[in-house]
Amino acid sequence: MASVKEIYDMLAALAPVELAESWDNVGFLVDSGKPVTNVLVTLDITPAVVEEAAQLGCELIVSHHPVIFGGLKRLSPNDVAFGLVQHGISAICMHTNLDAADGGVNDVLADLFGMTDRIAFAGGCGRVGNLEMNMAPTTQELAEMARQVLHTSVKFADAGKPIRKLAVISGAGGSMFEDAVAQGADCLLTGEANHHQALDAVRLGMSLIAATHQATEWPVVPVLAQKLQTAYPQLRVQCSGADPDPFTYI
Image 1 (cartoon, helix red, strand yellow):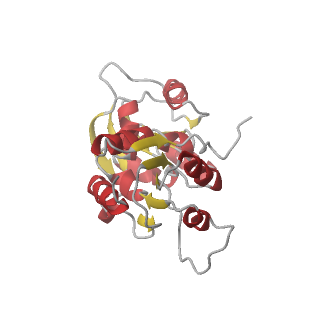
Image 2: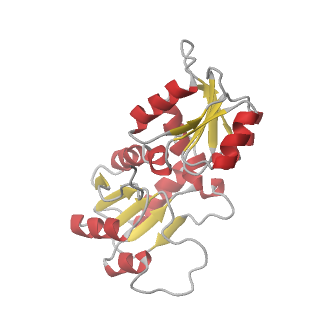
């Protein structure tokens, strides 16, 4: 067994709370007071994930997105946090601190695309770096690579030049396109971007690829689970199978 506090301290060393954005809510958010033998790792804590954790006998869920966000003034059976307490499950949530951390969400994403000489940008959350020396794909070719690597649907806006320097920001990073342009990126790969961000990125000479919020963040889940398993070999650590993309694509 391990205490939730011990596990939280280990995770906080990987992704210090100080890296989180000021508007975020991260940390040890639900304390059900039980020692831990089984851990479930996920992006989101939903009712289905809580039920999954209960069925697996998990006393702790580690998630990327916060289960409590903003001021909680009232708790009811419809709230996910209520379900956690009912089942005696604690929750540790690491959001923008895990985005920015060394080896966190965006480093894992950058690894998948073989980015080298990478540096942090966009307040530390994003990564920008070079593709391999023999690579200079078109936007469409890189979008196809993203589709295959991330197993997802992809849309792209093409500035019409080969991509040698790539910027990545997981999740809803489309608003950071100007930061990517300032870093000299030929393309920004993110999860979500809107119509006007795509237009402006192309106007400024940079392509933009949106590969869904879920797909750009999910790769960190098994990486984080492995880190937990290595640190606590006596625990059973599993990745959620009940946390799919909330959208259905047709």
